[in-house]
Image: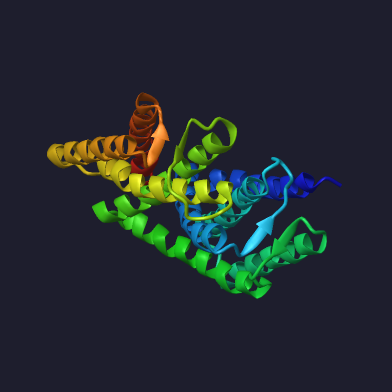
Length: 271
């Protein structure tokens, strides 16, 4: 059986939970999913991209690292955060958290057994121990979201934007690359570009989020100017190699997208 089938089965399971979660509270569930996925993405940047802990093998694209990163999106962008959000939105307790953790550990061991996933230095019990932490973070943060507050909104929207923007830019890099970064952190080009791309746009997400969340016109304008000037400097210096207009337009597009997401999702969740 092709490797991708097993990843699609995992996707199907995740979509079932997603639909059930949306039935309970669509706006709440979506914001929880995107927030939790942002936490998982940041975790993956550290252990997977920088420290090469494991390898996914969905066999979708030719480049092994890009292929592994797509597998990571199945896991850390969909399954884990959707399960965390499902447990949170249905107010399930510690028993469900432990069952969910053991379920994901079982899936991991099965994928290891059929050789569509590989440990490099990771251990299965790390998953068993860390998944409940991800679930608990989501449950606790949901209480903060309901309580409200400008910094709660900022942090939530930062991770929401991180999820959306890094996913979009990864797909751009894989499918239709029109930019790259003139700096070398890793010998493997695909790992190098993924790492720098993620760091660059995670930093950019602070600006997108500030512009979309903060109310003060002068602060918003200042952040926007710093974003544009900083982008221009990186383009002129050669750190970012791209057509200037295209890259700046992408930054503008992501800024507008962050404003729309904040308006459509977070404000309704808080209310």
